[in-house]
Image: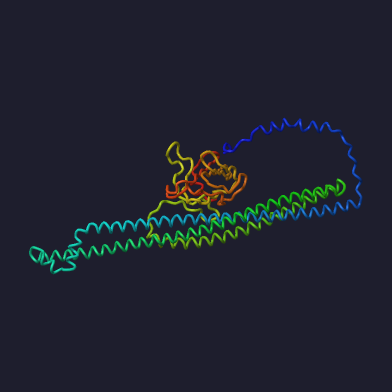
Length: 446
């Protein structure tokens, strides 16, 4: 993976070495100036320095508390972001299923109408005779040459055929009407799901803006904490003798350790509260999933066999999420042009959200050769995930991500009419630099 990252050049270091003489020679040419010795400290100045140091120390502690609160808020928003991305993927998955049912119902309606038209065309030559018999049965019977018994038997046969054809036509029309009704219902459900998916994406966008603001506040608080600590150290150095300054620095370290413990305790409480909220949300999702399963079982009789679709990640916190809801268009190790596939290709809806398949650190995120936008996540223990084909990246190299946290989006597709309107995402899992089957990763528990 290191080969994908650019190597720093050596020109900057060489230029710095060449510039050192120009920086040092003028300073050597300046005459040494005598520095006046500082006046001895007085009790008043020591007391003033101590008061200043105490005030600066209080400011540093307040800045540390603000930084801890900002970090806890950022963690809470990141967990909410993971849950929001999971809901968006579930909506996209259900929309794909509903669209498949709508296409199947439309095909059934078209087949029923075609069958009805074929039957009508086959009986077209006999329709005038059947119509004459229906309107003037006695006259038609007398006009038929031959014995009256044969004419009567023919009339009865034609009447029976007419009734059977009428019943068959009624059944075909009812089948076509039912297929049309199912297609309309599926289209209405798809529209509702699209609206719900749009609302979920808008909520996710608002949450991302809130998370970005929390990160900005945390950065500001961290800068303020560092500046306050620097001022506290400067004040402690000016508070009196060397022994006094050392004692104050030791007390400052003890206060910082206590503040760190308090911050860790606050983070632990925040994590426990977040885990409790996530467990409650998981239970609620399980109840909703059971209700949806019962509803899907009732509709299963009217559904056609559809293409196998990769399911979204389970709601359990121990599950390893798929990066996108979509269909496997090419398996790991599949043959084709050139060598066998070193990864897996997923086909998803245009504009689908892409999430991180693991928790780890982003080591690369940029355009790379013919892959388009490419993202590499270091999952630890020698595992690296490679995601290629993204249209937008919402994450930066060096940033840590959670499993299921949004990292970007797919594009709208160059040719919407091809591949059922799906957009490909290439997924590759490497273990110590060697590609392995990603399905084993997703089948395991995190």
